[in-house]
Image 1: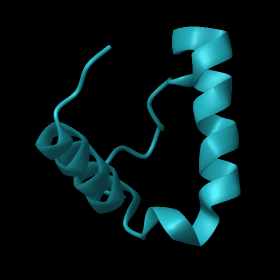
Image 2 (image 1 turned 180 degrees about the vertical axis):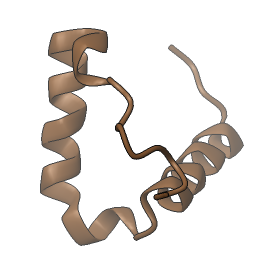
Image 3 (image 1 turned 30 degrees about the vertical axis):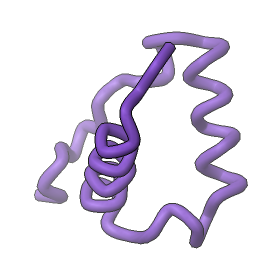
Length: 55
């Protein structure tokens, strides 16, 4: 898979915005979560019952 540098930069920034905190603060937890997503697929990507806006 080939991704352009700006695409990666945009996606990382978008992840930071959605999480509400920098990625480097809990990098280990994030890497474990990404590994779980890779192995288990969509089953671990269920939306939160609260929603994205926190309401």
